Image 1: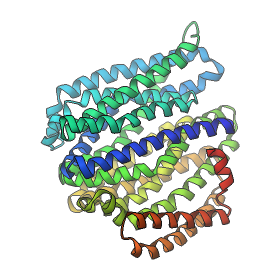
Image 2: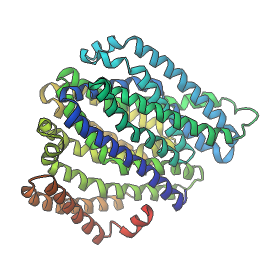
Image 3: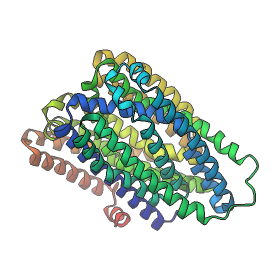
Length: 488
């Protein structure tokens, strides 16, 4: 991928995620402050978590498997690409139909299984939600395989921009968490139409199929999806099951704290998510060209800039969480403050994961990542069962941070084994980043007593950002002109 293509793809992906963050952030603000009670917001969060778990069985890793084989064939044998897409979509549709039907039929039973009977009315939306979310995600990921992440961005932006409209209308017309959930279904349905439409007209229909598929191609697409399914299943344990357990053990109000904290953490991850999504296919291309040294330098550069941004951001989040949560979302969400502070560590860990996980898939190391994810996610589940009864939502946050730390270390080891990274150079960079973080944190901590309202809070955050930018630039870790050139 040349610099111009990378910049275009990164800006499009970041733009789409910015739209998603702005829409979702505004939606969270409107729902928490004006439209839903903490109990209703917690019920909505629990329902979305349950749908996320069920959605795993509608995914089966087929989108990432398709993206991997599209990347492999599109340069050397493009006639095979339509066969890859047909096979992957056929598997996806079959799984979606089975899961959506089963979920619709047994929705009441599912609500009882998770010990949250209040979810029963919302479960009726499960089949439609799972189908539309799964198919829109399929398009987003396959565009990545074509190295056309601009279309991924368009699909994401369609769903995100419409989300605030349809969810708010749903609550106003139908009321409560059920109305909000109906809005999610309509938004993902619109994204599905756009994503699959573009995938067909702009890609599938423009490629002449080979006379016949390679022997065993369909089987290989399905086989490679197996470790990806294992990884995604483990990822669900990390990102969904904890929310369900908080609701089942503590109740919907605790879920509202936990779900809000997770949303805040997600808002901060947009740059890392955009960077990882845009750049990952390049690793597969460089491996195919036996350019491992170039791939290693690319990953090191990405890793250094990710830490430079996210370690100070996490420290700042710990410091300003108290006034930020209560001023923005109201005193009724003060219980979310310690959860947000614990999740600051997860912000850094997830940022590293976002630039690493897809890279491992494109480097052909999905199996190792699957084993690591499975083991740490099982540990996370067990630790949640131990910590939630005594610590509530905070315990769930600590369990996530502890186990995700191990997963990140394993990922980094596998990347190093594959690309032979310069560990000494990276460790020196880490030391500089922690120095900058300490200096910035000291300034923010000294300024916190002057926070008395939203404007003074914004001023303190901007002050911390200015200190960080100044120190990062003076130390040579940040080249502002290069950043501006990429983003302009």
